[in-house]
Amino acid sequence: MATQIKTRDFECSDAEWQARQDLAACYRIFDHLGWGESIYNHISVAVPGEENVFLINPFGLLYDEVTASNLVKIDVEGNNVGPSQYMVNKAGFTQHAYFHEKLGARANAICHVHTTATMAVCSHKDGLLPTNFYACNFQGQIGYHDFEGVTVRAEEGERLVQNLGNNSILMLRNHG
Image (cartoon, rainbow, N blue to C red; front, side, top):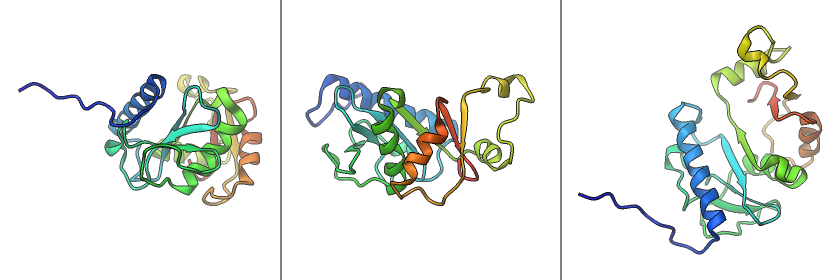
C-alpha cells in the first residue's frame, strides 16, 4: 500500500509552509530526544516575510502531536492570525513574543525546554561551569535570568532580553 502524504489544507505562502514543516519536525526531534515535558515547553519560529508574527505549538498537544497544519500562527500582541482554532500557552506566548519582537532576525527560532540536564545547570548557583570540553563549547554564549515565577507578565520581557545580552542562550535560573 502506498504511503499517503497529507498536504496543507489552508492558504499560506510556500515560505510559511516550509517554516511550518521545519518547526513540526523540530518538535518531533525534541520529542524523540526526550526533551518534551508534557505540554509545557515551547519552540517557535518567525513566519518568513511577516513582521512580528510567529508559529508556536498549540496548547494542550504533546510534542509528538504537533504538525505543520496545527501550529498556531500568532502575532506579538497575542492574536491568532492563522487558521488554527487552538489556543497557546500564555507563558510560552509571553516569552517568545517579546524575543521575536525585540530581537527580530536574531531570534528567528526560540526553544524553551526543561530537560533534566538544563534544570540541573539552571539550579546551580554558578550556572554552566567550564569543567569539560563540551561545557567549554558554550563559554561566552550564555546569559542568566533569575526566576520570577511563571513568565506571564509582559514587563519581564525587557529583563529577559537584557539578561540575554549578546548571548545566544538564556538560562532561566531554577526554571529551564
